[in-house]
Image (cartoon, rainbow, N blue to C red):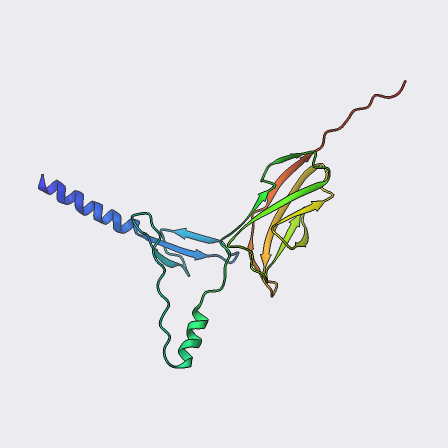
Length: 179
């Protein structure tokens, strides 16, 4: 019996060590990925068994010379958006009788920075919008596609949403010919 207990204890500790390894990296499109296998450019993430997020590492203390302060400034990571999704219209949604006006809502995490802009592709045609909620006019019956991306002040794309295909239907009134 003690032999079985020791084997079970060793197996449990080994499984915990395996589960505690995870890796995080961001691809060239700004999408964050996680894996249990290391990837080129990935950083190791320590998993916490109680479900809480680990505390971020404290920033390195600045040394007295100015060169160290410059190095610390260069090491600060660039701002990144975690997600950009289209909240409305939903993918594969059918919209009825919108009278040519499409209401669009984008969900951005974290919030849109003041010097960043949104470019929306509606049926392949790009247009700039100022807010995360806006209207597109002259949207008629048929199949449509919409996708959004955030660009920074220099014009570099920071994050792009998945494309959403949706449908617009319009009721018609059938008129009988006059006799």
